[in-house]
Length: 267
Image 1 (cartoon, rainbow, N blue to C red):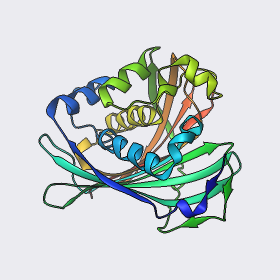
Image 2: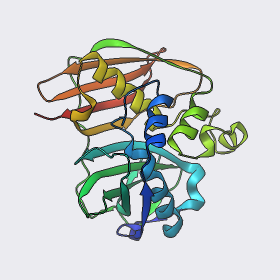
Image 3: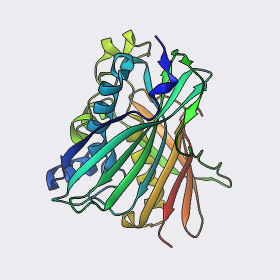
Image 4: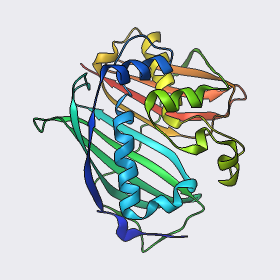
């Protein structure tokens, strides 16, 4: 199993997604939130586009090796009820990492008028899969800046059923999050919580802690540094600046699961 660097530049046909109120509400409710849309809702309509890209590029055969490693989402405007979005997906980078090949998918969502809604660089690590042909990238791939002066802001309880609830509410289906047999065959200790679920809960905790309006979020970045088995308890530390919040999320044993978290706000 190998990934060729010439996969960079490959594009999949745009996928159309209709945003309805039920989906917006369900995503927030699955995170324990009553307000919607949640700032991380775009991961829901981006998922089919990532699937289409993996299928058309031949990467779907390596899906059991895939782990979400990094996330960088820019919000031009929040998605809303009634939106019909076209999401274009492209492989924009392939690099070597010690655990395997690191590949970046870029999802660009536009509304029916062609206006930008969100752009996300979705970084994935293919564990144990080598990259051949040298590293390539066609856009700059930014690393989230390291945070400083973080202070504890609270804990997040993760129920044993959290991944199943998130799967159905987000409409994101990957069996490593819900099927114990599949997860073990993929080399995992058991089903793990979606990285975007951990990130979304961390973002909620940080916004609530500093009384920041979710509608003011313009960018979210992070690295995923560890896996979350369920049930679990996560501790979030954060710091507020005039236009951004830095944060980090750890398990009770101190292992970092979300590092270099950053929420950029209006102003």
